[in-house]
Image (cartoon, rainbow over all chains, first blue to last red; front, side):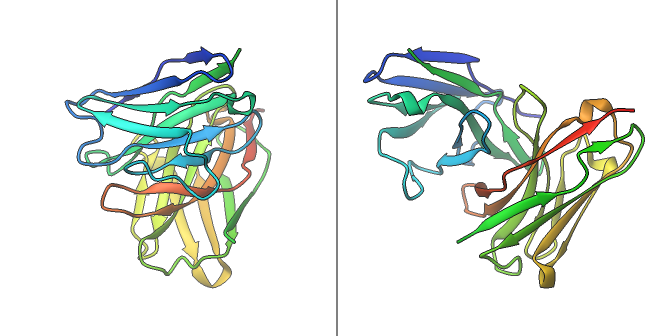
Length: 111
Length: 122
């Protein structure tokens, strides 16, 4: 069974750029499946942030972007703002599981 | 506008059966590619996928919970029901239902309910 590993926490000052990694236990993360990203504000339900190849739902600013390379994927947030302080989760489909995996989550603190 | 709302008991005793209902609007669960999933989150912990049902009644269960779960849909009522037997305190969590969209790259959960907290305690 695959596991998606994220750093427990990251931080950055307003205006800075931060990245959050999502590393898969298999040789290629999620392959051939995409990695999707969710934002969970404190006390709120998760919200889809990015799906597939850098697709953003309506209303999500282009400050958020993703990339995927080999055994890991990354969420990048540029021009950090106070309202970005939240938990972020990666997610993929696992064919061997015939189900869905979430990463362990990363808490972003805006300093 | 797609909305989902979870309902069910907030407190169940160990060994009891939990029944949660997801009532949705703004989409049909008979539309190709659409699913409704359940995802849970223990207090202070990460999201965990639990179960999902597709428009064609294909049902998927988390392997670790499969023996305890049943997911059904009532398309006419726009509802999905999750039943989990033999509840244990470790099942204490907020339970979310979410609309899923299938793509060749794998489904994603694009609309979420507000979540319903469930505590398992005697």
